[in-house]
Length: 386
Image (tube, rainbow, N blue to C red; front, side, top):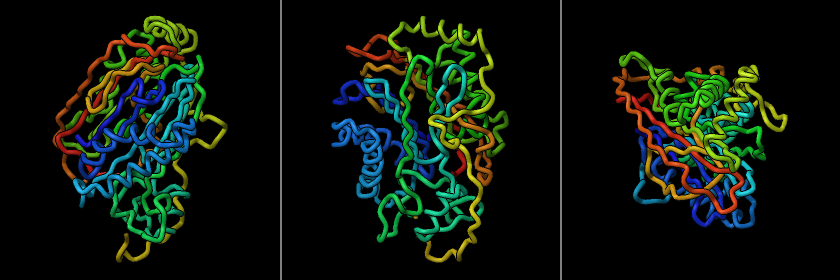
């Protein structure tokens, strides 16, 4: 399993901040594991965090995490990398989503899917411009004909231009950040790697999860059910449904008991079971998950290119906090899949679904909400490269 995740209802020394993240590894598990154990510590430990400058703290945390990986001798020569999608929720119910790569965060607002991240693909015009300016190229929808995403932690072979800063490398760990003030209209958020989003759209995931909540299905079971829908039925197939999958659902209880939250969602669903067609965006911006047109870039010669309810399955973080959120993973839209993603291996699939449940037994002293969450993971015996 190359994925990792973090679920912290209250990050230590953070004054009530909750943190949730999914890390989708490729080329090996090391970068994802390292990031899952340390990214939240670097964000909270950044000087900007103490000043409540959360956007700056998230950016600094991502870049410092990447720098630490690069110079850690234990990982010298490691060629792996990972995406990172993070949700930081402050004591005043402000949600900050940081994203590097093609994992996604999708908010459910009264049943409507709200995109909180954009897939970082080499075919996106802005991403392609940075890649070329740094000395790389885009071929077959991949960075230097190789990597199917344009931002990631690790992947240091694409970060070797000594004349450029970390934000401007062929592949960068610089996160895109969205912020949103949570209120009673917001019901839950889904974080998930692209193994989910290749199979279901963002709205499909939100609709499926919300109906399950209305039917009083636990978040843990809902995570497993979503992954059952996405896993390929044939163990000899490659591609869609054969990738590693991690899914997290975080529910916003807003200070109410978990039973009341389930009932509120059920009543809203009964009143309007199909509230929206298609994905919406916050702040009136262009769809942050949308794939932009391919930039017309002729590839140069390939010489010398240099680039709430909370359930936990990966027990790599301490889960002792109390915060206003619940967590789970989901994918944006089928239309946003990476058309160039090809599997090079025949995959024998062995479904491995793990989930553990944490009872909602703790609340912050003055919580703006209560948190519960669920996480599930699945992995084939072998997974295709990114």
